[in-house]
Length: 412
Image (tube, rainbow, N blue to C red):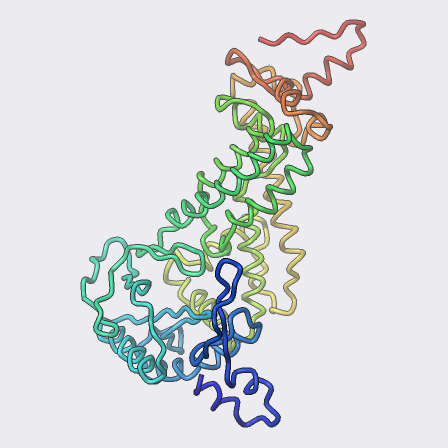
């Protein structure tokens, strides 16, 4: 508190100083307040200004860490730490360097009486899977830090070998809980219309599955798609044995991987337009420069995506000439057309869908799904029995609109 007051003491009159002088607080317990007590450390809880004040408070810590010069090289720059709110990540490419950074944090925290939560402080050796793990026991405040193989930072699980499969598994686990909430509401309401179901899924489940996907989304992860299949099967009321091309074709939902690839394009467009002083921009330029020597880089994955969509000339454009909406629409259109053709090839090759393919030739949402039907009604139309064919809306519509006086649909 004293340090903050010294920083902001120059302004007169000073409303911030007045707010924190003689600060008192009370605790509400069982509906009653305790006696008021003085607060001599920290910031006001729930105060909109608190994050900014904390950032000002720890600003000189960054200066002390950078002065040591034990970080990793990003082009011509050195990166020693990353800060977000009250989280800090120390980065070094040597054992002695990282220990020096830890000593710096220890000394600074003692000087300003800021307690570091050693229980949440972990050490992780990021490396290729072929390299051995470093077992050096790092010390912080005379406490040995635990070595972990993965760590959750800003909501994203990062592993020691940068294997994003573990990352996506954690996202699927969180997304599954969100989908469970949607499914329980769906059953409680005895179904809901297509637009409402889609809107809730897009608003509550997809944001979880796509979190940070601009970074890790260059590979296709089946676990993400399986969660979407589960949502589709729930809405259609069909069993696990119903062919995937049939349920996705009726629902008209494109793969999640397509949305993730669009997020890569969106991130690329943002990075190329950032000022050169931003850390993200520096890392992007560094990654681009080493992409001529290494194949498995983020820039090469993004370049491969652009090339596959016929947009290889985008890398020769000046930053101000890159039109983000145009690139996103171009990639999205290419992926959708590619998926439609792939879906059509799949239903042609599956014997189980020999009747389905006679009536379903377009990848689009079926009309009956958009009608106000109960869950049982929708399931009776979509349901597949006796392990033969799935009765689709196209088949039902064709039978009902026949010119014969008696329409007849046989369910095998």
